[in-house]
Length: 184
Image (cartoon, rainbow, N blue to C red; front, side, top):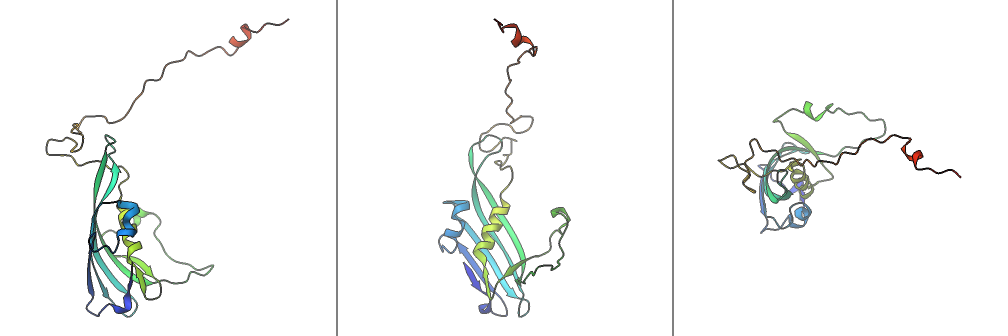
């Protein structure tokens, strides 16, 4: 879904999309499957080329619980604040500045996204916002008793690891095979 930025009024425009309005159903289907989504965002021009994008997206991702392995619908509630800038050419030998590591990024400030021509692909942007919000180890929430809300196993003090005892083999003498060798 692309938004024509030249059609954004000077005081900005609000958007509210969800599963029923269906603007992003095909774009998000590979991530969220049949789950519902709801997004609200506001785009406002800062000058003739740059725009401010503020908003949220809420949905659920199908994941496996990292504790018990049961399928869960992991809730995603992502906020975004972006400055949309025109895409610039990067000719060979060009130089640009970037942070050394993701931990060096400033926290809480707006980030930048590029658009081409006068169109911004909000579908691709929201797809990536949901994908990057997916946790490395998804786990169900802990209830008020300290138990996993999915499998009801106490989380505190419980090891969710799997440890299999391997049979011990006695080390063999490398020359043991020669003992059974018969020479004519």
